[in-house]
Image (cartoon, rainbow, N blue to C red; front, side):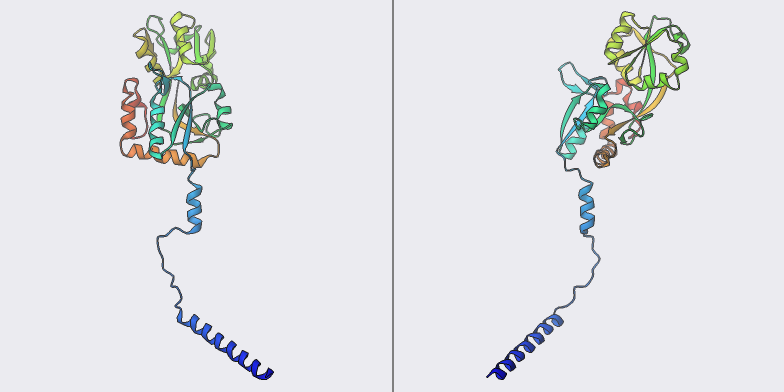
Amino acid sequence: MKKKAISVILTACMAFTLLAGCGEKNTPATPYVETDEISVDEEAEKDAKDSGRTTLTVGFDAEFPPYGYMDDSGNYVGFDLDLAEEVCKRKGWELKKQPIDWDAKDMELSSGAIDCIWNGFTIQGREDQYTWSIPYVDNSQVFVVKTDSGISTQADLDGKKVGVQKDSSALAALEGDASALAATFAELTQYADYNTGFMDLEAGAIDALAIDIGVAAYQIKNRGDGYKILDEQLASEQYGIGFLKGNTVLKDEVEAVLLEMVDDGTFMSIAEKYSDFGMTDSVCLGK
């Protein structure tokens, strides 16, 4: 009985083995077919390039028209904020407009209080401090004086009191390539914002104000014909969007949408809203 049982078991095992083998032979091998499907690694890489965010907090100087400022209704508006609004609309993000103290912009960015600095932000001299978008505005630094000041050239600023905004491109120029010119000034006063600087210019506390040409055009348009821009430029520069150093994911997302806006004409349409301030001439995209 024991031998017979063993024989039956062996026979059953052989039969199972044959069936299993037949099953493998009858199942055709899956052929390799080249398709357009995204591999697991490619999908992971794609996901890594998408920040997955729902909001974008933009840091800006609320007294820097026409790029960012408060209008008569108490709303924050401006060329850069309009661009940011359109980017967020297309991405399905909520735009959070965060006015900041310009001196504290680096702290705001590094702490995560803001996601980027988008407010007439100069690239030159800061290339290695941030992750930058492509330049979108060509800008110049100029001097604004009263029309009856008797000042017509930069040479006429010798012995005069000049104002400038703290941590601005104009200040960087006066402390850098134009330091010899600054040395001729009687005083160089730094202001927290340009509105205060213009008030001092109007009151005669200073004789000239070094400023971005777009901001100068806006201020002069709103203050009347009592001011003029000197023909000689102090410096030229380009504006970009500044992200935290290394944050290429967010930079790439925002920049891609900005370029879409250039291609479909939306970028230039927004610039045309601020044509009275020379924005259509200043932008370097969409032309």
